[in-house]
Length: 119
Image (cartoon, rainbow, N blue to C red; front, side, top):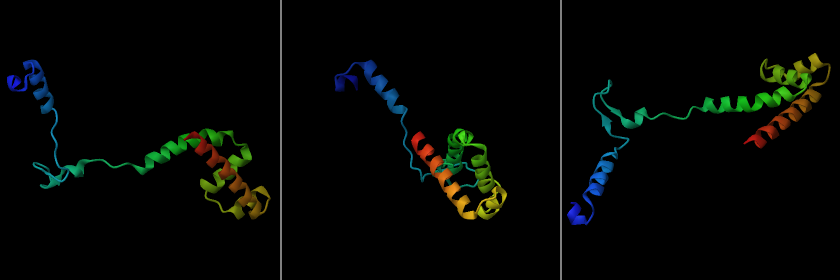
């Protein structure tokens, strides 16, 4: 083969060895010996875990929430951890539901801006 291609023999040997490292297979091809009998290669390919993005978001948000003052952190906690209504938060703070709505909107806008600037 090296004579036919006018190449040194060691290059042909190296090329043939490299060719052995590549083996394509259809993702729909069945895999023999699987427990259920007819598994396809595609069945073993992982999928993106949507919860992983939440972990990234949490790590990005944590320092921003830590920078908020105590009252703002408490509002975020009540609304999104304890899931209190705006009315309930207003009663705890001694302000109207409308004011709580404005506070939450302002806080979320600030956090959103911080998240967008980190990406």
